[in-house]
Length: 151
Image 1 (cartoon, rainbow, N blue to C red):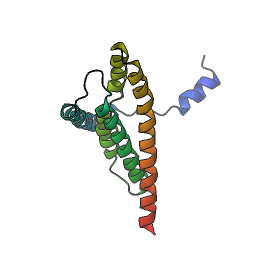
Image 2: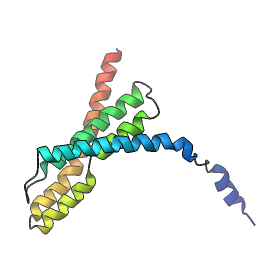
Image 3: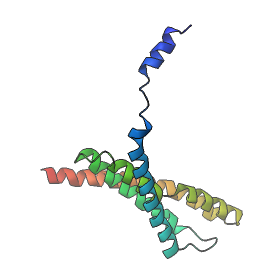
Image 4: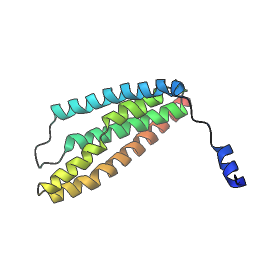
């Protein structure tokens, strides 16, 4: 027998969109992710980090990506309506593929395992702090600039 509580939960659960409705979103996330990952990889080729050295390229890729997401989200949520596929393509795909917190974790482990514990711990703390500061500052600055243009 079904309880009144389970009926309420079933009634409040929205139906899942069909695969056909989600296919364009999956496609643009995949395309954007490939572009973002290629850009990140290119950055690592142009500015490789020395073994045991501070992984500056990964740090700056993550900080730059977070700053861009701050600007992007402020613009698409407060200025103009974007096509429904813009956010998944650019925000999730391109910037998700560009930023690399998995490489951040691998870099930390490599530094610690390689006897560079101090550098690993500094990197462990610096990356999330710098990334959060970047998104916060970029979004705030973008909002102030956009507000000034509306006057």
